[in-house]
Amino acid sequence: MKYGLIGEKLGHSFSKIIHSELTDYDYELKEVAKDELDSFMRKADFKAINVTIPYKQDVIPYLYEIDETAKAIGAVNTIVNKNGKLYGYNTDFLGLKSLIENAKITIRNKKVIILGSGGTSKTALAVAKSMGAKEVYRVSRKGGNGLITYNEAENSHNDAEVIINTTPCGMYPNIGEAAVGIDKFTKLEGVVDAIYNPLNSFLVTSAKEKGIAATGGLYMLVAQAVFAAEKFTDSIIDKSEIDRIYNKIFNQKRNLVLIGMPSCGKTTIGKAIAEQLGKEFIDSDDEIVKKQGMPIPEIFEKFGEKHFRNIESEVIAELSLKQSSVIATGGGAVLNRRNVDLLKENGLVVFIDRPLEKLITTDDRPLSSNRELLTKRYNERYDIYCSSADIIVNSDCDLEENIGRVKEAFLNENSCN
Image 1: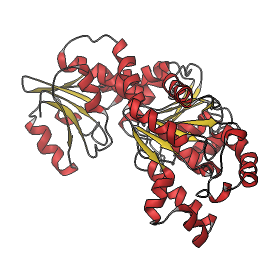
Image 2: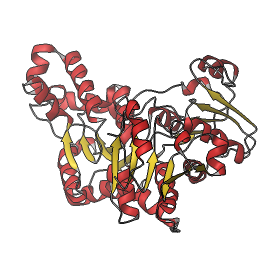
Image 3: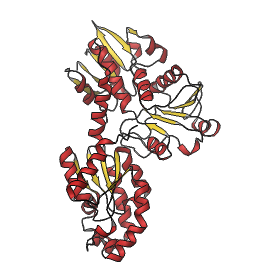
Image 4: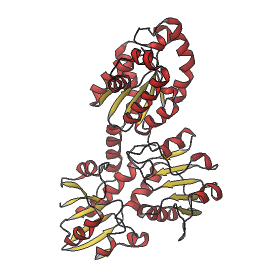
């Protein structure tokens, strides 16, 4: 390996994609077990590498020299081999600072709590202080050594105005989790999460639901990679590349999630947009049929609606882990708010709002098989669709125009900021 990233688990990493956009060197992902790190660092058979969890502090003893930022933080994420001597840098500092600025979250004169005690937590502490935070507290499970516990954070420091998460809680594949509950913090104005997979962690989506400014970590990842690539190549890269690469990757990875009544056009519109955008199309009802090995009316007849909803939630939890997809959900998927919350972590939820008079009934939809049932379902669910959606698209035109409306809404809305 000449250039690349080392860490313990890298299956979720976007770093190779980002660096391929920046330069023409071959960038590799190399998982290094803890008992292999010493041998790897002593051999130093590389030109330049990035370092991620859990080795940002462990690599320091192997370095000939580290820059002032990395030294002050006590964590290194970029190493350059210069004639056999290893030089360490911390580009996470500039990456996190860029993320906070891009999200327009104010740190100056604010009370900040940082979740986590590792290398990225130390970076966040340095960034918060440099941006003029009034108070900063780092949080760990056990506390001590200048850190507070989660219990102290939620009970004695629940007036914090900004939360920065540097823990892996909520990271792929364990989405739908958060280290703290947003409801505990009554004065919260901003949430910053270093997690970038999913695109918007549960912590971020929970904050956004309350109208709190919040951002996931993809912009930080791209920004720190640009600054690292400058170290790798000893060159200056135009900082407009950060926005270009971020927008490209975000839109490639983000799912389009379609919700709405049966027969509103989710499947037809979804398939067309998936083909146009080069994304995979998935119908959650089709996945339920595969999982159960029988059509949906038969599932209802044999096991009832409660069983169907449980299977539906299992399927949606699996689909929520996917990226670069168009996902059409069943008409009742929104009845379980947990389904919506999970789908929003990697997706933009669009309600295809087709007028009741244009909806049709079919025998394969047990809860809307006749006009009376369809009308009842529409009245029961309409407000839920509206409250669940990031965007509502009126679908009262011909098919091509409806496809265009949904596609335009998806491409023109950046839900990460």
